[in-house]
Length: 241
Length: 201
Image (cartoon, rainbow over all chains, first blue to last red; front, side):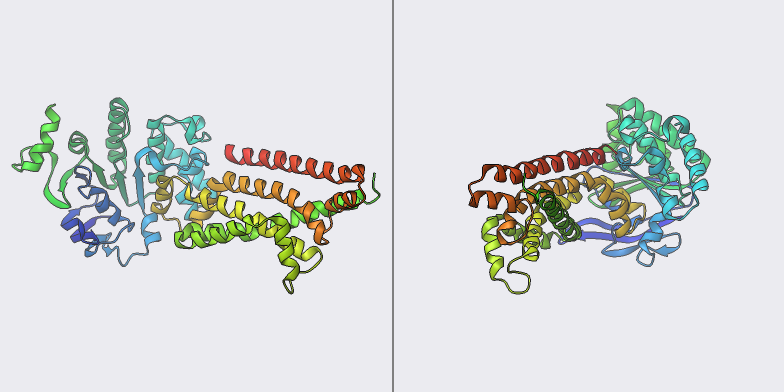
C-alpha cells in the first residue's frame, strides 16, 4: 500500500504539531522520518494508521483517505513496531505473534504455520522461542518478536516508531541488518521514525527531515548527504562525531 | 459445643459468598466503566469510600429504618455486607486497568483491536492479579463484618457470639469466634494463592 500525505496539519489547541506536510511513499519504499524530539515525526506516523486524524489536509492510505477507512480494518492491514516491541507480557512469544491472524479468524493450523515462519524470518528458531514468555528474552530478542508480530498477518504497510532506540549499538546494528534483509524478502512499504541520522541513511530509500512539524528536506540517502539546508547539515554533523 | 454450630457456619459461609460474589458482579463492571471515564471515577469511588467509612453497626442500624431493603433479617444484612465489599474490588479493578503499560495498550489498539477485545485480551488478564487482591480483601473483611450481621437477624457465626455474650458463656463465644477467625485466615490464604497464580501466568 502506498501512503500520501496531502497538506497535513495537526494542532492541539493553539499549538501546531504538524504544519502543511506533503509527501508520498510509493509501494515498496522505506521512507524514514528523521527529526529531533518534538519535531512531530511520531505524530505523523500515527496519522497513517488512524491513531490520530489531521486537523487539516488528509492522509491517503492504499488509495483511500484515513477519514474514510474503518480504523479497525485499516490497522489490521498495517504492522506497527514500537520500542521493545510493546509485547503482551502475559502471553507467550507464539501467542503474541499470532494475535492479528487470530483476530482475523485464521484457523489454528494456519496461525501456527505462520508464527513459525515469521519466527524463522527473524532468526529465532520456533522450537526454542515459541513457548517462551517475553520476560525470558533480551531487549534485542523482544524487538525481533515485535517485528515478527508486525509481519504475521502479511501487512501491506509497516510502521516503525523508533524501534531500536533503546538498544545497545551492537544489537542495534544487528537489527538494522535484519531490517534490510527482511525488506529484500518482503518488499513491504515502510515508514520508519528515528532521530538517528546514521540509521536514517542506512535504512531509508527516502529520508524526510522534519523540524517543528515542517518538512525541511526529502531525498534519497545519497542526495540527502549533499543537501544545502541548515537543518540537514546540523544532523549530518552528528555523523562525524 | 453448641448444637447449631454446623448450621451457623454454613449460614456464615453463604452470607460471605453471596455478598462477595454480588459485590464483585457490581464492582468489576463498574471499575471497568470508570477506568474508561476518569470523570466518573471520582464520585463512584467517593460513594464506595463513604459506604466503607460508616461503622458497620451504625450501617446496620440505618438499614433497620429503610423500607423494602431494610428491616430485620437476611436481606438487610446482605445489603450491608455487599456495600462494604464494593470499595476494595471497585478500586482495585480501576487501578489494575489503569496500571496496564501504555505501550502495551497502544500496540493493542494499533494492531486493530476493538474496545472489547482490548479489554478481554489485554487489560483484564493483566489487571487480574490486582482485581483478585481486591476480592481477597473484600472477602476477609466480609467474614469479619458478617459476625455483626447477627445483630439484625442475619444469622451466621455471630449468633453464637452474641448469644455467648448475653449469657456470659465464654465457650459459646469462642465456638463462634474461633471458626470465624479460621474462616478469615483460610479465605486470605486460599485467595492469596489464587492471586499469586494469576500474577505468574
